[in-house]
Image 1 (tube, each protein chain N blue to C red):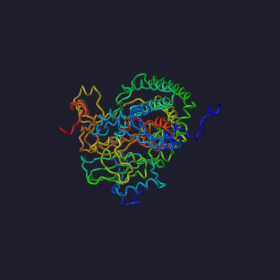
Image 2 (cartoon, rainbow over the protein chains, first blue to last red):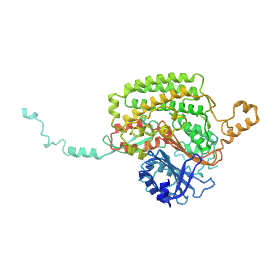
Image 3 (tube, helix red, strand yellow):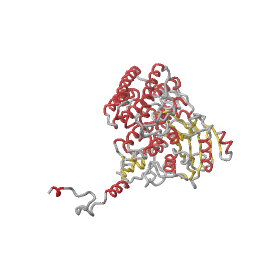
Image 4 (spheres, one colour):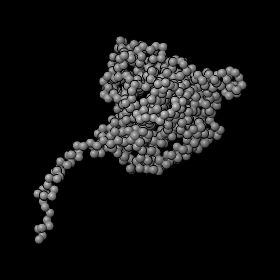
Length: 172
Length: 419
C-alpha cells in the first residue's frame, strides 16, 4: 500500500488498520482502475488473485455519508497477503468503474453487488442480476429493504407472518 | 432383360424425387448452421444442486454456456443481519452442507478475530479435527460422484461407506450428521465424547482401505481417464485471474494453501503436504482431492495423538454461556445467561476480513459490527463462486460430454454459491 500511496498520492482518501490488524485503504472511485492495475501488474506486488468484493450499506451507521461502500479483497500469491480496498459511493450516483476488464473474476462479484445493492459498474460487459430473478424490484441488501418483503413470481399460499421468522414484512 | 434392373444413375433424372429434396450439400449446410440451445437443469442429476446451464450447441460442441444460479438463494446475508452473532451459526451450516463444520468454524474464527479473542488450545485442536473430518466427507462425495457420473457405481458406494462412517463420528461429536452448528464464539460447546478418539482411528483405518479401493477402481480406469484427462483444462494464470483457490487452483500447479500460507489454529504444528497438480485438468483435480484426503487423515491422527487437556471455551461470561451450576445457583450466572441469550454477544464496532481454507478453497468472511449485538454485514466469500464463474471460460468450444466431469471436479456446491 505504501507503493500505491507513493505512486498515486491523490488516489488514497484514507488509510487505517482494523481491529484484527488488517490494513485498509479507501480509494477514490475514479482512480480505482489505475490503483488496481498497479497492484496487479507491479512486479513487487502482483495482487493477481481476485478474492472477493461486496457492498456495505452504511445507512444505520454513525458515519453514513456517502451511503455505500464497496469492498475489494485482493490476494498476492507472491507476498502471501491480502490487500483490502474500499470505494465509497453516494446514493445519488451509485456507479464505479468496473474492474472486469482487469480481473475476469470480478465479473460475477460485480453482478452480485449490482443485484443486492444497486451499484452500477461502468464498463461491465454483462451487468445483469445474478442470484435474483430479472423481475425483482429493488435491491434487498439495502438497509431500507424490509426483511420479509416478498415478491413471489407466482402467488403464494397465505401463511401467517408468525411462521416466517423475525422481522417485518414492510407492508404492515 | 438384364438392363431393366440397373439402377438409375445417381446424378440422373428421377421424376419421383426431383423437386422434393434439396441437393445433399444444401441439406448439410442447413443442419450445421442451426445451433441448438438446450437446458441443463435446474434439476439435472449431474448439476449437484440446482443450477441451470443454458448450453448452445453446434453439433456436440458447446458454443456458448450461460450458468444461471440463484435457485437456492435463501437470503443468507439478510437473515444474518437480523439475528445475533450466535444465531448466525445455523445459517452457516447450510452454506456448504457437505462440510458444515468448516463453515461454522470459519465464521467463528472471523468473529473471534473481530472481538480480539484467543480460544483455548484444546478447542483449536477440536476445530482442526472437525474441519479435517469434514474435508474428508466433502472430497469423498466429490470423488465418488465423479466416478458415478463417469459410469462407475462401485467407487461411489465405497465413497459413501467411508463418508457414512465419518458422519457417524461427526454425529457422536456434534449431534447432527450434516447441519452440525458446532462450536461457539470463544471455543467449542461440547467436548470429545469418551472413547471417541479410538473410534475415529478405526474409522480412518477403514477409510484408508476404502480409498485404496477407490483409487484402484478409478485412477487407472480407461473410461475414467479418457473422460477426465485433458478435459476441462484451465491454465494457472487464468485460474488466478478468476480468483480460484483450493484444490482446483492447486491442480493447476499453484501450491497455495491458507493452512500453510497463514496458519490458523494449530495447523503449523502438524506435518502435512500440499499436493499440487500439473495440467489443471479434471484428472489432476481428482488426484489432488484424493491426495488431500490422505493428508487430512495424517493431520487427524497427529491431532488425536497430541491433543492437550484443558478448557474448551473461554471463561468469559460476556462471550460464552456460564456453566449450568452457575446459571441455576447464582444470580450472576442467571443474568449472564439471560443477557447472552436475549441480547447476544456484544461484538465491538469494527470490521474484519478473515479467511480459512475450506474444502473447496478460501472461505472468506468480511464482517462489520456496529456494536449492537447483531452483525451489521456478513459477507461470505464462497470458494465455489469464482470457480463456477470460470466454467464458461473452460468449457466453451469443448464437447458437451466434457461438461459433466468438469462440473463434477470443480465441486460446485449450490448452498454456498447461491447463499
